[in-house]
Image 1 (cartoon, rainbow, N blue to C red):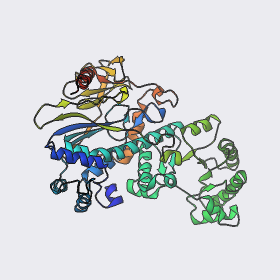
Image 2 (tube, rainbow, N blue to C red):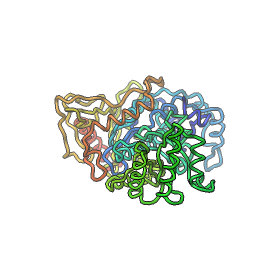
Image 3 (cartoon, rainbow, N blue to C red):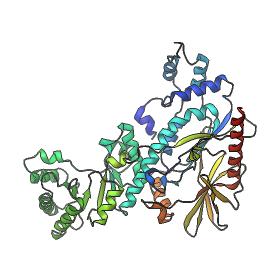
Image 4 (cartoon, one colour):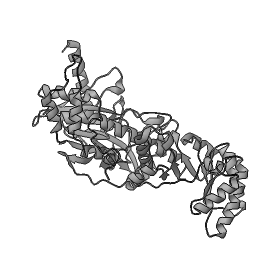
Amino acid sequence: MNTLKSLYGHSLALLTDFYQLTMAYGFWKSQKAHYEGTYNLYFRANPFKGGYTIACGLQTAIDYVKNFHFTADDIAYLATLKGNDNYPIFAAEFLNYLQNLTFSCDIDAMPEGTVVFPNEPLVRITGPIIQCQLLETPLLNIINFQTLIASKAARICQATNGEPVLEFGLRRAHGIDGAATASRAAYIGGVDATSNVLAGRLYNIPVRGTHAHSWIMAFESETEAFEEYARAMPNNCIFLVDTYDTIAGVRKAVQIGKKLQIKGFKLGGIRLDSGDLAYLSIQAREILDKNGFTEAVIVASNDLDEKIIGSLKEQGAKIGVWGVGTRLATAWDQPALGGVYKLAALRQPGDDWQYKIKLSEQREKVSNPGIHQVRRYKYQGEFIADAIYDLNISDIKNPVIIDPLDYTRQKLIHADAAFEDLLKPIFRQGNFVYSAPTIHQSREYARTQLGGFHAGIKRFVNPHQYPVGLERKLDQLKTKLIFEARGKNMRGN
């Protein structure tokens, strides 16, 4: 299913910043439309002050690219846009060029669920410069958000030590698409199910849910509410017990659970949504166990995240299922990933690549030139380092990698280390060539990827920095281009 088309039903070519179109127009007018560029999409820092990030959003990006075209309605709208002289900004010939534009780029990307690190390209796009430029904003929009949410979900699932996590963020998420894609990304990051039924249908994600406080309040008593719910769906009974008095609510749930047993059904469990979750879960567990409901789960919600979950576990909470909403679907403590999309090489078709670099007063904002690939090394069952290398100039047989932010930090890769190149072919000359995994396979891939890294990288506080660096020749090229660019600037060229 093409989920973007299912959700919106029309062209999304105008899902872009206006300056992308003005640059495309400038390229067209300056006779550079046929130039080829290579762009890298990456981020500069792991989110949530963590030690790793989970790549996500590729399938949505594939759906976008497959349907990338300007419709007659798109062109009609663009024709109405005027400059400060009140005349049309775009010439009719350019708009005709856009309407007849056919996607023809190469795209390579890391599969969803890959554990990734700063400065590594999650996506590499090569092709006509206008097409590459027009893809910048939508690819960043898609990849940034889903990667952020998948990373948050992975941290939360890590905190529960394998206990199920349910994503409950729909009502607080950032709009309809924000909610649906958050559910998708959270599932790839490791959650077990979502409350979002639309996301369940669109992405084949398991859905879960029982009732809210309003169900209890709609009846004369809490007992009556539980009885009616059990009568309506005896195979889906997890009772929310904190509407009036939590411990009393647990005891009433036990009474209904015994009636369910007589009818051949099981009490699924109870849910706590307020109060001292550690204390109440311990008390509830005792009541459930004394009455023979040892398999009934205790579900907890109420503004949970990885830090609160970790604290509850330290307090001995008897929670078995974790419902996480607002702080997952909105990436509560970091609202954006901060991914960027930078031109790394340029050429006229058939010529050699001219490598490009962006300078900055901030060292972390100096871009990396080149046609990048990322090679991940594994030794004695554990990932040990990633090398960012150039497909044309790098010596990758016995690489030395250099930290792009600190040239004194260098690492020689063990000669016997196994390796894998992480960027996979997705499109070739506009043709889709990738065998896309299912969302369930991507979720499992994320889990196994995380299992291959040292525990220090996964710490929530002061995580170990996983070694990622530029291969030596690429680092030398970068240094050379920095000096050349600064020299030109000093000469006023």
